[in-house]
Structures are given as structure tokens and as C-alpha cells.
Image (cartoon, rainbow, N blue to C red; front, side, top):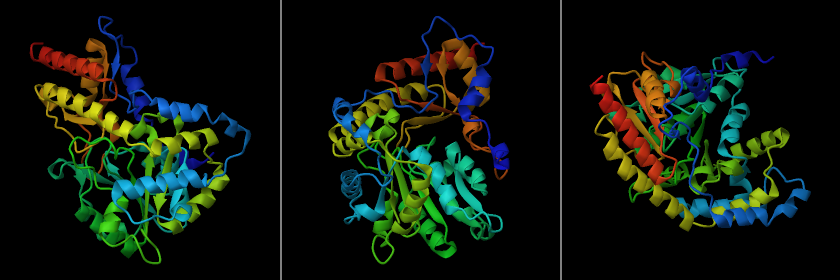
Amino acid sequence: MNPHLDKLHPYPFEKLRQLFAGTTPNSDYPPISLGIGEPKHPTPAFIQKALSHNMQGLANYPTTVGSDALRSAIAHWLEHRYGLPPLDAATQVLPVNGSREALFGIAHCVVDASQPTPLVVCPNPFYQIYEGAAFLAGAEPYFVNSDPARNFGCDYASVPPEIWHHVQLLYLCSPGNPTGATMPLDDWKLLFALADEHGFVIAADECYSEIYHTSNAPLGALEAAHQLGRSGGARPYANLIVFSSLSKRSNVPGMRSGFVAGDPHIIKKFLLYRTYCGGAMAPPVQAASIAAWGDETHVQDNRAKYREKFNLVTPLLQQVMDVALPDAGFYLWADMRRTGLTDTEFARRLHVDYNVTVLPGSYLAREAHGANPGTNRIRMALVAEVDEGVEAAQRIVQFCNALKHS
């Protein structure tokens, strides 16, 4: 067996299952889960129609590179969303079966484990796929802690120079999971300069990019590169690839449809890698994806639902814990030290007393540089419909108020 498998940590939801083992939730309340970031808004009917009307495609083997029409639809969306110059859809865009498998696979494509001490930089807290990908590619993760003083952004300038010398891949998530933090242009400028100096690849996870709570859409990685003069020349978007998905944007997590875009040199190598993995998207899914990428009305409606939900839920929870509206995404990242409970105690007792599931923040982070930045925090995924989200918040307020009198 691959010895690197022994380095993998249990997934956060397995830890949550173990935390709840032997408990019986209060049957007076129907269960509400804020634990898993799985969109619960209805899938738009036109996407379902496009999927069902293209079932004849099941009679054909799909190509890994995807159809010209799908790559063009993705390229057009990127150009429109981020104000980019025309992309070469043939060399700068690659459809993938959801961003998760691609984020995992890119480490196997990029990391050269024969080099001394290969490192993969990850934010902390983080999406656990980054860490697992690093281990199984033969590298070690190096965590950069989120900083509440920087609006939960990572301070990449604090990383020692001797670390960057060994970095081969850097994962970042903007808007971030679980913090909702977005990367400012100055941070992008620093990372691009470091990537140029040390030759590492930046893998930008942007699956939450279309859920934001102000009139300003989050800055994207390709957009930042363009603004900094990196979208042209012999190697446009050098050392940068972006990962995105329809799951959150269009409420189709079960369709497993996303893309990778950016540096054509990296895309070419990643296509070769994925050809051997068999990572080809089914033709009906490609047809439905073309329809989804081509429509913004349903995205605006989806965003409006999240805004309504966050505007109702956040003030309720602020009565009992320290929590603020995030830059973007559909998570609340709450400091619950005012309750006197640890994050795991809070999650377990809330589950038992009020049948609401939240995820302990410490499950989403690692001890690094003397701290676990998820300790004493909980992540709440506001993915259900508005009424259910408000009901969950009201129960949490009741629970916290009851603690004061216990």
C-alpha cells in the first residue's frame, strides 16, 4: 500500500460523526444541518432540461478535453466576469468533473517528489483536499494561518524565505472556506513575484466566487493577473491556474462540473495527466454546463437568496457570539468563546439540545506556528432555504441564552 495514505487525517465530517456518537438529538426539533457546504437551493429548471434533452450523448465516449462549445462557453464567462482579454479556449481552458478532483490531481501533476523537501503551501483553516493532495504527491504541507486582524486573510509576507525555496505548489481559496476572506490585489502582487522567483505554481480555488454580499464582486486570480500585466506575452498567466465549479454558482453539486483555466503550459501538462486518469465529463453534463455558464439571471437570483438569509441570520447570532458578515461565500465563521464552551463542546451540545448541526472550527485547521486558528470557532453553512436558516439561528440563540442560566 502507498505509505503516504497513513498520513491522511480523518475527514471533518467523520470527526463530527464520532463527536456525535452515542448522542440522541432532542426530538422536539426537526434536524437542521449547517455542517456541510452542500447547496440546498433548487437546481434551475433550464439546467435540468438541458441535461435530460441530451441523453443521446451517453452513446459516445467523451474526450478529456471536452467539447469546443463547452470550452468556449467557459472562456466567454471568464472574459465577461473578470474583464479579461480574449482567452484561447483550446489551450487555456479545461473542463473537469468538479473542482475537487482537479484540485486533488494538480498536486500529482506539479510536485516533483525527487527534489529535496518539496512543500505545498496551504491556508489554515483549509479545504482538506489540499493537505491530502500534498501528502499523496510526496510533499509536505506548509500552513499559513489566517489572521483575524487581516480580515482572516493569510499573511504570506510572514513566510520565511528559506520556506519559499522548497515550495512547488501553493493552494489558496478566495473567497475562502471557511472564513469568506477575499484576496486583495497587493497580496496577489506578492505571490506572483514569489512564484516568478521560486518557480512554484499557484492553484487558486474560486468555487465560491459568485456568492457575495455587497455590490462588489470578489477579485479573481486571472483578473488580478491581468491588472498586474500578466495576461499576455509568450506565457500568459504564468504559474497560475484557477479552479471553479457550477456547484455553488448554479446549485448543481451532483452534476460534478467545473473547469481549470490559466497558464497554457500547465494546462497542457494537466490535460496529459487527466487523459490517463480517465477524467472526462459526460456529454449530457457538458450540454447542461454550457446552458448554465451562459446564463446569469439564475446566479443573480441565487445570490439574492443568500443575501436575504445572511442579512436575517447574522444580526440574530451577533446577540450571542462574535460573528460578522463575510466578504463572500455561504459560511459564517463565528467565535463562540462568549459561551464558555470549546468549539467541540458547543457543536455536541447544540446537536443534542436543539438538533442543529454545526462544524467545529478546529476540525478545519491544523496546529501550526503554535496555534490552531480554528479553535473556539464554528463554521455554519447557510445553505438551506431562508426560513430554515432563520430557524436554525433562532435555536442557536436559545441554546446560548440557556447556557447563561445553567
